[in-house]
Image (cartoon, rainbow, N blue to C red; front, top):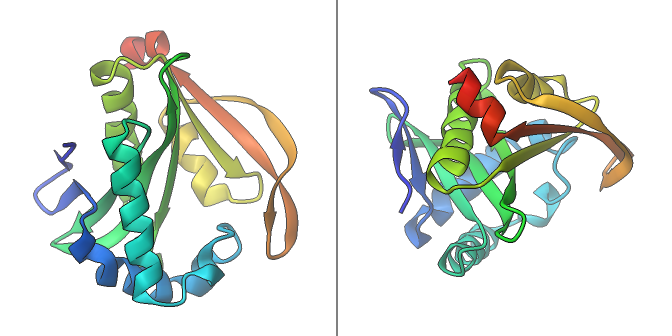
Length: 182
C-alpha cells in the first residue's frame, strides 16, 4: 500500500474507514472554498457520505483501478489526492486533488502531485499522467505547470459545476519527459 513521507510533518497515506469523520469535517469546513470547483461538495452532507467515498476508494484500489490518499499534516487531514481510473491497457491515469483552505499556499499539493506522478511513472510503470483543471482555477492549474506538465489543450464545457459548465485545461506528463526532468 502506498505511503509516502513528504517531509518531517507531511505524509500521504491511504484512506481507511476510520478517516471518515476527519474527511467529512475537512470537507464541511472547506465547503465554500471547494464549491466553485468540485461538483460533489453539496452532496456530502454527513459522515456517512465520506465513509461511502472511502469504501469506494478501497474497492477501487482492491480492483487495481485507482487509489486515493489523505494528505496529513502533523496527523491532521489537510486534503486528498487520487489516481482516477487507471487505464492499464494504455498505461495512463489521471490525478485529482483538493486541499482545505487553511492548507493552501504551502506547497503541499505540489509535493503530493510530484510524489504521485513519480510513483505512477517510475514505480507503477505507467506511461502517461493527466491532470485536468477548470480553466479559471488558477491555483489548481499552477500545480501541473510548476511540475513541468505540458498544457495539451482545452476541453470546452467539460464539467457542470454550480455556476454552470466550465472548460478544462488538460495537462499531460509522459514517462520519457519525467525521467529527463528528475
